Image (cartoon, rainbow, N blue to C red; front, side, top):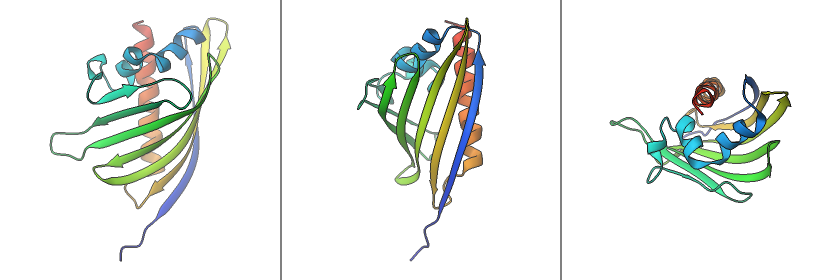
Length: 153
């Protein structure tokens, strides 16, 4: 029998975007806008990406390199306060292996025409398939992509 392992971590990442809160919030809520920064292209809408942005709604995305593994992201929105807060839980899989389970909170804070975004994640990383350092790096990269996409909207 293989010994299972668990690593816990909490991290906070903050970003400042030179656009109003409503524009940043829309980039999380509207499927074409979210797909642009979350999946790399709005063309991902369809078979590999879905977003039902409402409390109890889900978001899912599947992708991976041609030689595998296929990574699957599945989330459920637990709390949404427009232009203020999003709370969601999510699982990540690599092929059939569950690699992590997390709860994340995104806060949108207005500073005039600028948005201060604070993302807090509490994660459980399973059986050495993923680790906190990789998740922090990946989340920072996604928030950088969000910033780049906001410059184009």
